Amino acid sequence: MKKILLTFFALSLVLSSCEFDKGFEEMNVNPSKASQLDVANKFASVVLQTSGGRYENWRASLIYQSVMIQHFSSRAGYWSGDKYFRNDGYATSLWDRYYPSAVKEIEDIRAQLTAEGNSGSEMGMTRILRVYIYSRLTDLHGDIPYSEAGQGYINGILKPKYDTQESIYMDFLKELEEAVAQIGASTTLGSSDLIFQGDTAKWKAWGNSMMLRLAMRLTKVDETTAKAWAEKAAPNTMTSNAHIAMIAHTDGPEGINKNGHGEVFDADGNPRMSKTFVDWLKDDPRLPILAARRSDGSTAIADLQGMPNGSTGVTVPDTSIYAEPNRKVITGRDVPMVLQTYAEVRLLKAEMAFRGWSVTGSAEAHYEAGVKAAMQMLSGIYPNAAAISDAEVATYLAAKPYDATKGWEMISEQYWAATLLNEYEAFSNWRRTGYPTLVPTNDPGNVTGGTIPRRLIYPTGEGSTNKANYDAAVARQGANDFTTRVWWDK
Image (cartoon, rainbow, N blue to C red; front, side, top):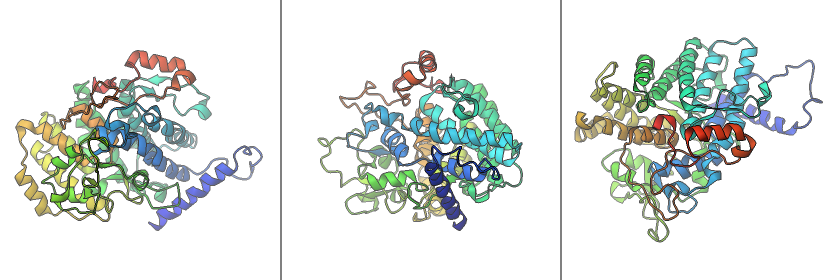
């Protein structure tokens, strides 16, 4: 932790000095000094940009996706996703933040490593993180600038084309395969790697685990390709909760390394646990870890009620009786931001086995391992979470055994539960599988005809600043609205 804090401190100096020097770059060139920052400093920065700040985590992650997927609920009118309102600034917040920051920085790092002739671990790690960054963007919006994105300074491309999601996904899978092969036994990034602290074996496992995730994303639109890549990835994925991909955070320095979700929960007391989610968790040992009653902080199962999605001040005049995200456990500014878990991997393998694809182990065995991992990972991610024992897991599985006749539904519901606070992934997997079965809200002001959105929209400004490419994407993909489906969701 000391090394991580020192990295954050160094990063804060880098960021502040860059701001101070704005406009004086040419005057400040020292011919005896290197003209590039070390990649390690840049890597720490881009990892934090990937985790995101309060702005996009509040808007894209929580205000829209968390309530659309019915993990959370809010009666506040500005929580647009709970009632399918259109708020362009909120719905485009990930795009607005990622392209000038995470995208620009990851492309800069890749270009620098290329110029330095680095084709080893650092390049492989950069390529994996790059795929992750773009996967969030394309899963949320569909066709996006990809092959020409972030190239303004590098190649002078100021109006990047929108690549098709199909071509992006094919490149993702190739990139991950090649990136994993590049990673060796060690890396020079060390503590600047805020995900695995320089453990290259974990990076290789994550690269393959992400390959599995993205391969399974294609089951609806191209099952043959999905099967081929899933079977390629499956043997070399994460093997325990020690492999979870998550970004370390601390409660300071200000504005640099706090968990963006934690900052939201500090500022906004409106979110409650969704009735859909709490009702599903009623006999689950995770419920008192994830939820607490708003009025007195009680975590007694009998005290925990979820608030219906689509609630308003008229339908729910008093929200204090409802459970909220447990503020003593999961809402901290210093808890990690989770990117992908071992539980997700085992549940995806359970789906592979359910489909009859080649994977070691039965659907039931992977399902049970996934449930166990999802329950027991909580005390590893959240320091204040109570540990769930093997006996508690066994009791749960005995009461709710795997049923092959509804295997995909059970697997997908567990995946939904395991991805709380990874709302990008929860929303994507729900669109792919259709599970859990969610009942839409139908507020009179909704813009979807009372259906759960299938994507978030492009910034309207793209229609003027990058008009030709924007128009081509809309013509190809469909209207720039919430009900247009992305390629893998057709």
